[in-house]
Image 1 (cartoon, rainbow, N blue to C red):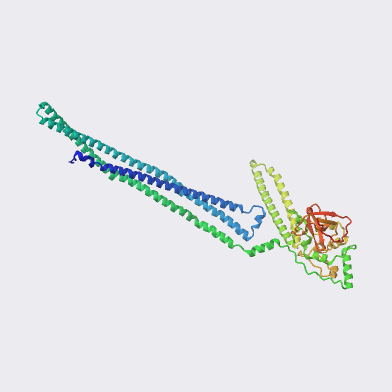
Image 2: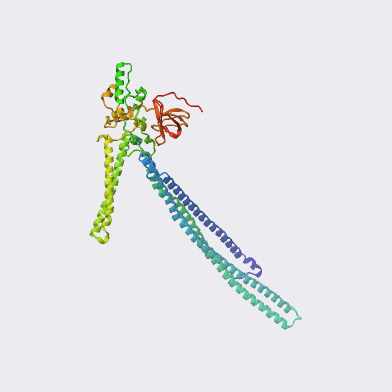
Length: 583
């Protein structure tokens, strides 16, 4: 049996549970704030990973765009440049950078699926779990507070009844000691005192029962319910901490997984760089631009001190070049022997212009172009033949199975393919003939036009033309040199000698003034300064170029728009001194 304290001590005896309730409530508030902070940290980490994935995607996109930007364009000059080892290595680097960008996309995808998506779903679950735990904690807190209020009410009622019983007892004793009070009043006071004592006993019993119940609930609250709730919150918080740690580990693993592939990309770039062969590239340049011309031989010394040799030289020149031609000077004759490109056909100055047989190119370049053309035509023939075979098979199927189609419907197309094949074969024969001519398998064609200027052909120099027709091209396409003027009378010169070496200087047909400075950097052109006066030896034929001469050793083409031409129909091939016109 629990002994109850005196009413005067009840208040101080039952104040401890109130403090415990208040402390428990304070701890719930602190835990609520801390767990909310933990969720905020998790959401901050999710945001960090999400921004990292966006950076990876942006970086990968920029790498892909960079690789695409420097990729060679199809059917362009750039594509031809990628046959060199250095440019092939650069192309391999671009391809590997594309794969490198793909690995950064993999990083972004894996971080999104393994970290961002998982943590976002976990945060939602964590919020629900946290809400449930704190709901249970508040519910338990409210229950213990309700029990505490019931205990307080029972205690106050017991205290009030005890005080009432004390007053009733004191009133009864006072009435019993008073001789003037009747017996009935004394009896009434005694009954009232007994009633008050009974009420105090009932309140005492109720208070004792409520107190026992509260102590039991309080014990259950602080030793069972609250610890369980705190334990669940602790486990929830620990799971959150473990989860964010695992996510950080995954963050590193995602990067680590692509390191071998990125390393392989870098190894391939290194391998491509090591494959660069400067010797091979140089040889390819030599093969690409090799002309096939032989260097010119030494210029023979012409001795004019011997009268006999001078007479022989003059007769040789008169026989080979005809009467009425002025004897070429030593400087002009040697100029034609220096290099065959000096009098290169001006058609080569036009972009995209050139004869069908590539005769404007040096022998080696011409051979390559002709071979490429033959290969291209053979490929076209093979395509047409494959199409014809397919249509023939289709026609056979239609003949055997008329319900599948009309066999006569493909006859027109077959006829077209046959005509195309025949045309292509004729083209192949034509280009193979030119190719055989260049390679020396067939004799040179006499009807092939020689590259001569229009002004020179207009002179109708029968002596020079007849001499040129008697000459033939050497089998190897090289340019031969004249050993001496006596040898020139006995040994026939080559076709190239006729074209470049034995041409006489063209006569001047006027003069011109350079309106602007022109830097003649291409073959066949000549540099002029603004205001300079020069001789015109061939006027513009409609291609925008005028042929001029500065002196006997310097001549070439300049843009017609750069000079002001003064034609003189009665002009002689006599060089007169020219002076620059000052502005």
